[in-house]
Image: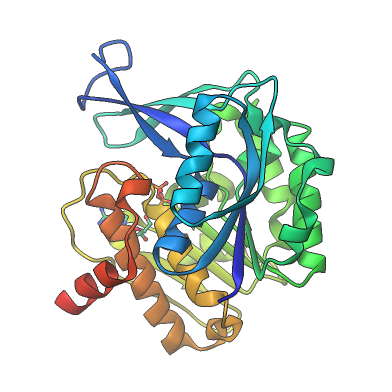
Length: 319
Ligand code: ATP
């Protein structure tokens, strides 16, 4: 099957060993490897697809640990650079009482932010059938230039561009800057996935409806997806739009649900771009992606919770 190249950050989330406490109250932390683009790459390989990760890690124990996790999961690691000076990024994460996650980042600067355009493995990027990215890699130079170059190279080589902004407001200088920069590469994507929260943020509307989603449409876009957590997802194409319900599961940690959803979708899309034009087939794929997202919420952490194909079939058949 075709190669999916996922570009951006990989880091370690430090998650309190007990839930419902503030960072200061936490008695200890567990390492939870993550970073949305890395999660997406592993989501793809777990489902049997082919993926590579492109990004930079610190030349330290954490960086090599993360690269090892990618390799153990059969993600092609030839696009990873190690920075000699900066550390692998860390984030401390608390779950607020309303269930939303709150982040405190250690990036001053971290290795991921220091990827340079000339360090890109262009041969690997040119071999992508799908090139996937977020917006965290746009925040500072030189990573921003590396991101823009990688996107261009992938597009010129014929890849489908897939964008999941993955808004992390605390990393941006201001909300205005976040919105402007996230939208600055909007029109280049073939496929965009936003969450309900991101839809509200980007449109400035407090409504999660078709009108606000369509205000994010651009003429070159092929597929826009709005994920709605336990409510499933909405899809928009040039010719049709609709909704696919989620699966009912006992969610314990939603981290990585969106990345699992995206990985599943890209896995199906990479060898058959035409399924976007067929609503019936697209709906089947979105059911599959919803099942992957749902399964991911049933276990703690993102990477350990990403499903393999048989698990997905079993929850789909149980319904
Ligand atoms: P993330 O938590 O990774 O940032 P996200 O906000 O990008 O996720 P969500 O909308 O939370 O994305 O989840 C993606 C998909 O996963 C949803 O469309 C849905 O199908 C599934 N999902 C998420 N949460 C639940 C849940 N509580 N129950 C069932 N399915 C869920």
